[in-house]
Length: 585
Image (cartoon, rainbow, N blue to C red):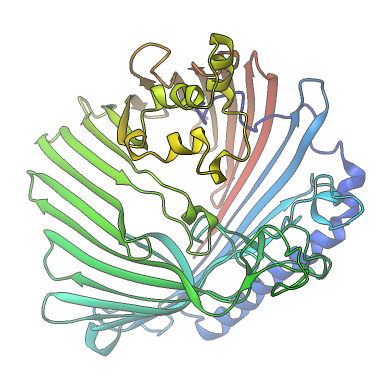
């Protein structure tokens, strides 16, 4: 088990800094420049429109640019992955487009737009260009500089005497069903009867479509734009499904008018459309349908279908109660449930309990729906205190439980014994690497098939880990210091526990020239141990040096130098630069 924040196994290194691949960068500069010009042109058009429509409106322009370079080096010194990333966002917004002075409970209009480009000049031509004669390193759908419209919508509030709000365009939704994005229209009606109705219709944002990202799709399907060459060669990458529009609609009912309680029901359905491959192999027989090609499915079909309920109640100074549940109608099971209680002991101390249950769910087109799935649950207690105005303390501890079919501690050895592995050496190898057979799961007369399918061997079993975190932060007028520590470990001896990870990070920031120049840094140490792979045990050390300067009120520059080291990967380096800007009247 590896901690993602400070381990040597993550991608975070660079022995070659940006500029070592000059020829490769220049060969793709014109392609990237064209995409960047699309972003700049779109924002310029939006800016011109806003200027003409609302000269007296409130407006702002925000943006940031992040640059980083790193290489992933093999144990033999070869660069197996090189990246030179430049991520930039630009936002334009204008408020109070109705003109005149702002008046409460009167109709207001606004336009908001933010776009992002994720350029990577370290990608080789072979990674992004389909060439049947040379597919080494090729990744379908990978782009040098994808452009993403994060959001862009027109919004109206307090229409018809404050009863109606609307949004039209690309927008985010956040509710018990999760963080989601779609292109379309949403309307909200607030009634005088202490409830509001919210309805939307449009298309889910999906990867492979213009100005879109795949981060909001249901998991389990690899989609994107299949270019002409890849489409013509259907035998290649059948698991890479062609992107198509995903119609969606939903409705929500929410309590309103009561400040101390908020209750909401949300429903959302998304459809798949277009053509999708339903198998990884082409039909070999001439007499079968779709002879010589792949079996496909077409037409409108369900992608996801979920309903959820959430509740939040604040009891004056006593505390807060929150909870929610999501039911997946396609899977016909609860996919998530959570609850938390906060109790305010006094003005400086709060204690709480959190419970969470998650069942993995996938897009209805996903092959993962064919496999069994098991939930995970967690229960923890926490405390947060502020002894003084400068010192904050917090900690939580609890357990995380995985439910499995069969006991993980004995399943592998019992299955290997059923497969005929008898000697201690054979059992040890089989338990670690699995049974050496490819036909047992299709042969009902095979002893492995019988053992694996027997219900008495698949009884639900709970495996628990102990988890804990602690944090302390001290702030003064010109800086702050922070200490964070974590632990996750199984129970019992090596034979029954799934391993351990633990570590701590100390960070600090000090203003050397208040309001203009700061110097920050971080030191970390993390250790992990896996009984099944003791050769991967390691302790990782790392540090970050991060100066930050704000020469102008609307702009800030931050640079981070990161160095991580452990016995598995040696020395790893990473450089990151971040520029942020905000302009408003």
